[in-house]
Length: 470
Image (cartoon, rainbow, N blue to C red; front, side, top):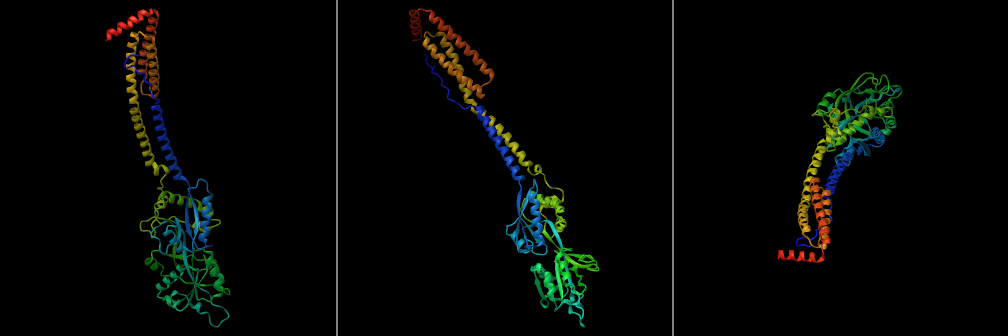
């Protein structure tokens, strides 16, 4: 074999095309996977903890019904898990501590700083009344003479429910009328014991707080009526003044005949009202709160037969000066500006497509960079083949021709690998095939010539050529 004709043994190279395809497929799968994962996390049901209390209250029953309805819905986006508390104040504190996502709170109590309104669960009215005077006595009960709140000084007042909030509300009303709360005896009894307590407790007046048609309030009023007499309802004529001084309250009226009978009360009674709110923790996802609000108002009508209070659920006040600021997610639902999946994630999708395009461009450049070495090697091998063609035409040894043939086979193998990898084009492969064909023809012709020459002539020709090159 002549000098510089060392055989080229191509190393087993991994296909650049396959590497490129692997990189592109891996990148595409990563982006698709991230998109699918993002979609899954965006639409999968989110379980929200909602604080509500006290036990056995109407609020708890409504929330439990909502939770069951939410959890039984197909394709639901939000599920509920009630967290029972001792009452509205405890529920508010639970939300403030971050132990719940939602809470049922009273609007007239301290609202947590991290609370934002989602819906108005119900409106409550204050009912104050005096039991009828007992019959058969020359002197009527002292309480029977009470017709105004200002006359309650020195009296005993029964408050339905154990929550301190109702007592504070009573004191606020008394103060508005110039009655010193310290000069009034206040007694409380549990809501579930109200009827029996009122029947046995000789109080001069009573106060109950709840929805206008609250069964608890109606039962308490009925229990206080004796011997066919009707209670006297005490109007809160200063309701507008109270509302002016305390924004959590509103002036309201108790309609005639709304408390258990057609003549109870026999005329409209002025009073004050406040709301129980469903609030969400500030920072809770707008999309999650919007989905919860949408489900809430979609399902409330289906619950009204079993839970009439559910039909009273109202949208929150979206005004900027609302007592409790509305959550942006709830406001989006109320205002019809709720964003769709594409609205929320279009930017991410666009950037993902841009990233995929950039990855494709980078992958193409990288593949071209990897192919550069193969192209350079193939170019040198093609030049080597042309040198081998010249050598074959002058060779005087069949052994040398066999070695050249073996080297040409290696070059052919490597060239085909380069073509498969995409390092060379079809035109380059065609040119290589022409050179290779010329080489094979030259080897075949030279071998035929050498085999036809006598051995002494072959040696003489070799010696002559060697002398010429010395």
